[in-house]
Length: 90
Image (cartoon, rainbow, N blue to C red; front, side, top):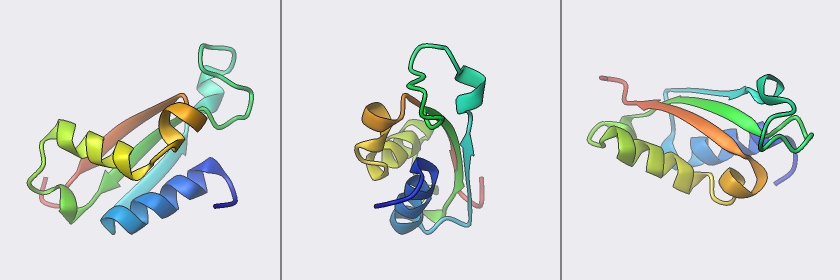
């Protein structure tokens, strides 16, 4: 995939979960000079996602599903991702 890491994340999460709400927030500027900052400006993100697929999942299961959907992005290309995942009914 080409483009920014945030756009890749958006594409992967949209494909995996068909979310009713999705925000990818780049928090990298808040971590400049800290551990994990690689200077790319794309090292730290917050994902806010709401999807029906999360309805019967625990909080931990939702986070694991999001991390799995993001593939090699987390841990290899991005240092940290904060995840706020919910179902539309939650």
